[in-house]
Image (cartoon, rainbow, N blue to C red; front, side, top):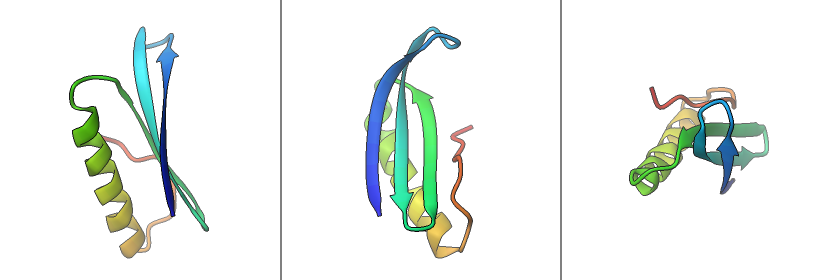
Length: 66
């Protein structure tokens, strides 16, 4: 499994966003959130959630932080 992240400007949200991606042999998990002071906390939550989903056999896809 490989974790990566990238930042870009989202014209619809009118702000910078960070995209977290976990690439596995069966597909990718991903989530996109606005950049703020909580970024490192969200990074850990994303990684923990991906590991939990994989352990429970969930298919790869988007992860919501709502």
